[in-house]
Image 1: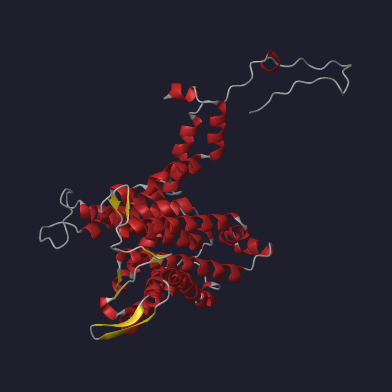
Image 2: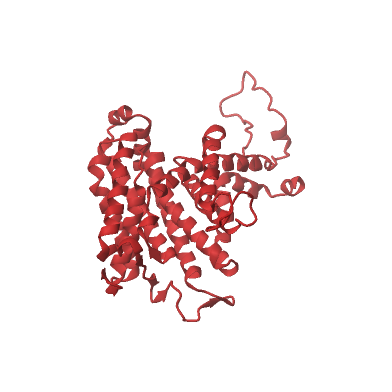
Length: 407
């Protein structure tokens, strides 16, 4: 390995060092995300889609908690607004059993964007509180959203379907359905059903969410929110309106949650009130703490870890000790309980040994790899390898000088 690195061209080494470890990992991983629909089964594709849902929601929550320093325990409510909002906007009015279900019948892509906006409106309606409360006080206040939302989902049957939920209409883009359509679409001989098509839609949504959050953090709003998180007094001295920026952060985070909820509805193909409980909000907080507060990549890493772990334990429950499959009468832990124990332990270990989260561990490891790369060779010219003689007392200012060139 060292021989290969030593033979690498100097320009390549310089470019690798300029990119940095995180960009290198991102560029290497992006092409790999395009291949799963060609090789993986429906179980793994749906697991990946649920992970994308978690990534979008965690990025939005990280903007609020990690960047603005605010705490929200009610973000599952905004996922519900996005999921039910898309279903109501995209579906037609019809009867399901004895229930008359309302719907506007909008084009699915328009309904998706409107559902995100609807979640933003719900967040803006809560902004008078979110702009004035902070920390644990805001966290306790947002708990009311969970109970209010659960009551509304159970009783507004014409919009939500009540306890049994509601079927979600398929996404459609430019006449191409992202559901299980019988149109014979195949790529490289692989039939593309709903999960395969929805996979790429989810990738685009994750990319847009990550880029938007990255630009926000690097711009003036991100610096203002960081100043508020570190010291409200210092931020006020610099002219940052605390209430307005906190309210804006809560609204933007709610829009992220709405987009995640709409994608969750498309992946699950049915929405029920039990999806959006307090446990979902707690899981989202665990995602951003395990991944790394204030980091887009950290939120994504923590979201993948927390969302994929229960699926893996459920899939391999027969081969794992102390884990039993759903409905089994044997003694042991269910997959959901075992997953919470494991990422609870991961949360404690992260706080103790890696306060920067998973993204901090990845950055340190990639930095060690980059430090192993050889530095570009310097010129072998004698004028650069030997130190210059000291200037004579009579040397003028216009004399020749030797200056070492840096790569």
